[in-house]
Amino acid sequence: MERYGKGDGLLPAICVERQVQYVDGVLGFYPPKYDSYRTLVIPAFLADMLEKLLDSHTSPWVFVGVDGGCLAQTDFNTFYWRPVADGSEEQPRRAGGQLRPAIPAVPSFKAKRMYLIWRGHKAWLDEDGHSRYVVETRMGHELPGVEGTYSNLTPALERRVAEMLQARWESHRETLGPDEAVEIEPRPAEARVSKLVREAMAQGVTKPLDVLREVRLVQPEAQYIPMRSALQRERARLRRAATDGAREGRSSPVRFPLAGSVASKLLVRGFGAPHR
Image 1 (cartoon, rainbow, N blue to C red):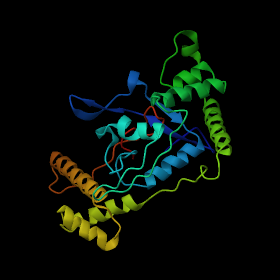
Image 2 (image 1 turned 30 degrees about the vertical axis):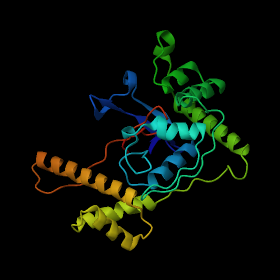
Image 3 (image 1 turned 180 degrees about the horizontal axis):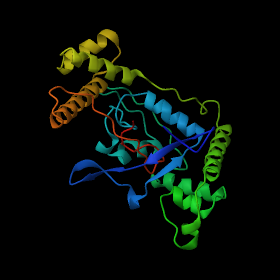
Image 4 (image 1 turned 90 degrees about the vertical axis):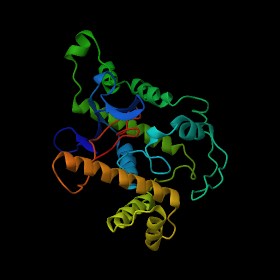
């Protein structure tokens, strides 16, 4: 998580540095839309959520699928957004997987596109009375003429954005019932599985079922699919490390450095993008 401002009371922030897209069937990093590189301050509640999310797994991607893989490699609208927005019936347990409970629909998003989240953020900024320059800069747009040339985005203006978004969140929580206003806690189980997989592979255990047996000696409840995903990620990491080592004249693999912080239209450090 980045920090923005000067002196004491620095604000949590995220950097928009790149976007992740498929080009000719290959997933890669590209400049943000309109080359709109920028830093976005975020409210305290969102910074806390992101920190807990990052603590819940060891993937190089900020947001991961249920199997620990990259969200860009799945049909996000069909398998994630629509079940959450429209609701979904209970899904039976698959081999090695987990039972997915019924998901109630979200009335304000039912049958609507995910872009409403992006557009809704702008509506909140407008409703809260932020200047047009503040709003458009945050959205990654440029204002023409005198207004765009001579306006500046100051720490005080950024702080006001973060404080008003925080106030909106706290006001929303006051409307929730006791069963809805729950605290979000990290679930480190998958992160622990990934760590155990790395340790098993470091000892020369590479076959999936053998790795699973090693993992279950420490974590008996470990499921096959998350373990297999962790195994695939570790193999990919080692391949990249070996390639990097060969390019730099090293004979042994080195730890693959994660890419820099990223933000997407969801105002987070990347929709399927790596974090530090």
